[in-house]
Length: 123
Image (cartoon, rainbow, N blue to C red; front, side):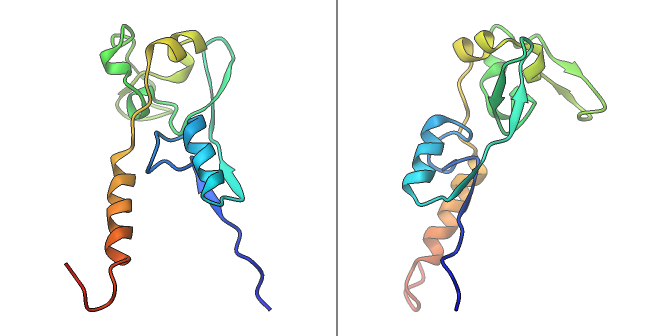
Protein backbone atom coordinates (compact mmCIF):
# COMPACT_ATOMS: atom_id res chain seq x y z
CA UNK A 1 0.00 0.00 0.00
CA UNK A 2 1.33 3.41 -0.98
CA UNK A 3 0.68 6.32 1.35
CA UNK A 4 -0.13 9.91 0.53
CA UNK A 5 2.84 11.67 -1.12
CA UNK A 6 4.66 14.29 0.91
CA UNK A 7 4.79 17.69 -0.80
CA UNK A 8 7.83 19.94 -0.32
CA UNK A 9 7.71 23.55 -1.47
CA UNK A 10 11.00 25.16 -2.48
CA UNK A 11 10.88 28.83 -1.36
CA UNK A 12 7.07 28.83 -1.18
CA UNK A 13 4.80 29.34 -4.19
CA UNK A 14 7.57 31.23 -5.95
CA UNK A 15 5.96 31.02 -9.38
CA UNK A 16 3.08 33.12 -8.12
CA UNK A 17 4.78 35.38 -5.57
CA UNK A 18 8.42 36.39 -5.06
CA UNK A 19 10.25 33.51 -3.38
CA UNK A 20 10.75 33.37 0.37
CA UNK A 21 7.98 35.87 1.15
CA UNK A 22 5.04 35.47 3.51
CA UNK A 23 2.69 35.49 0.50
CA UNK A 24 4.66 32.70 -1.20
CA UNK A 25 4.70 30.59 1.97
CA UNK A 26 0.98 31.12 2.65
CA UNK A 27 0.12 30.18 -0.95
CA UNK A 28 2.25 27.04 -0.71
CA UNK A 29 0.29 25.97 2.39
CA UNK A 30 -3.00 26.67 0.57
CA UNK A 31 -1.69 24.61 -2.36
CA UNK A 32 -1.12 21.66 -0.04
CA UNK A 33 2.58 21.82 0.84
CA UNK A 34 3.48 19.66 3.82
CA UNK A 35 6.94 21.22 4.23
CA UNK A 36 8.42 24.53 3.09
CA UNK A 37 12.11 25.05 2.37
CA UNK A 38 13.24 28.34 3.89
CA UNK A 39 16.88 29.20 3.15
CA UNK A 40 18.19 31.46 5.90
CA UNK A 41 20.60 34.36 5.44
CA UNK A 42 21.98 36.77 8.05
CA UNK A 43 21.97 40.59 7.87
CA UNK A 44 24.68 42.99 9.07
CA UNK A 45 22.85 43.46 12.38
CA UNK A 46 22.49 39.70 12.92
CA UNK A 47 18.85 39.35 11.89
CA UNK A 48 18.01 35.99 10.30
CA UNK A 49 15.91 36.29 7.13
CA UNK A 50 14.44 33.82 4.65
CA UNK A 51 15.99 34.60 1.28
CA UNK A 52 17.01 32.20 -1.48
CA UNK A 53 20.31 33.97 -2.23
CA UNK A 54 22.92 35.65 -0.07
CA UNK A 55 23.44 38.02 -3.02
CA UNK A 56 20.70 40.67 -2.96
CA UNK A 57 21.30 41.42 -6.66
CA UNK A 58 19.84 38.01 -7.51
CA UNK A 59 16.55 38.36 -5.64
CA UNK A 60 15.83 42.04 -4.89
CA UNK A 61 15.78 45.51 -6.41
CA UNK A 62 19.03 46.48 -4.65
CA UNK A 63 20.63 47.71 -7.92
CA UNK A 64 18.03 50.49 -8.15
CA UNK A 65 18.23 51.39 -4.46
CA UNK A 66 20.42 53.77 -2.42
CA UNK A 67 22.66 50.72 -1.78
CA UNK A 68 23.56 50.05 -5.43
CA UNK A 69 27.14 51.22 -4.80
CA UNK A 70 27.72 48.66 -2.01
CA UNK A 71 28.97 46.03 -4.46
CA UNK A 72 31.95 43.88 -3.53
CA UNK A 73 33.71 40.76 -4.77
CA UNK A 74 34.11 37.90 -2.31
CA UNK A 75 35.72 35.01 -4.24
CA UNK A 76 34.85 32.50 -1.50
CA UNK A 77 31.16 33.17 -2.21
CA UNK A 78 31.04 33.87 -5.96
CA UNK A 79 33.28 34.98 -8.83
CA UNK A 80 31.56 38.25 -9.68
CA UNK A 81 30.43 41.24 -7.67
CA UNK A 82 27.48 41.15 -5.32
CA UNK A 83 25.64 43.11 -2.67
CA UNK A 84 25.26 40.63 0.15
CA UNK A 85 22.72 40.30 2.95
CA UNK A 86 25.49 40.76 5.52
CA UNK A 87 26.36 44.16 3.98
CA UNK A 88 22.99 45.68 4.97
CA UNK A 89 20.88 45.78 8.11
CA UNK A 90 17.38 44.32 8.30
CA UNK A 91 16.00 47.87 8.33
CA UNK A 92 17.97 48.73 5.16
CA UNK A 93 16.59 45.64 3.41
CA UNK A 94 13.00 45.77 4.64
CA UNK A 95 12.48 49.50 4.03
CA UNK A 96 14.34 49.96 0.74
CA UNK A 97 14.26 46.74 -1.28
CA UNK A 98 11.52 44.76 -3.00
CA UNK A 99 11.68 41.07 -3.89
CA UNK A 100 11.89 40.00 -7.54
CA UNK A 101 9.61 37.39 -9.07
CA UNK A 102 11.92 34.74 -10.47
CA UNK A 103 11.35 34.38 -14.24
CA UNK A 104 12.54 30.78 -14.31
CA UNK A 105 9.45 29.86 -12.32
CA UNK A 106 7.25 31.67 -14.83
CA UNK A 107 8.74 29.45 -17.52
CA UNK A 108 8.08 26.37 -15.36
CA UNK A 109 4.45 27.47 -14.95
CA UNK A 110 4.14 27.82 -18.73
CA UNK A 111 5.57 24.34 -19.21
CA UNK A 112 3.10 22.89 -16.68
CA UNK A 113 0.23 24.49 -18.59
CA UNK A 114 1.51 22.92 -21.81
CA UNK A 115 1.64 19.53 -20.11
CA UNK A 116 -1.98 19.98 -19.00
CA UNK A 117 -3.23 20.20 -22.60
CA UNK A 118 -5.29 17.06 -23.33
CA UNK A 119 -3.64 14.50 -25.59
CA UNK A 120 -4.27 15.24 -29.28
CA UNK A 121 -5.04 18.90 -28.57
CA UNK A 122 -1.49 20.30 -28.88
CA UNK A 123 -1.31 24.02 -29.55
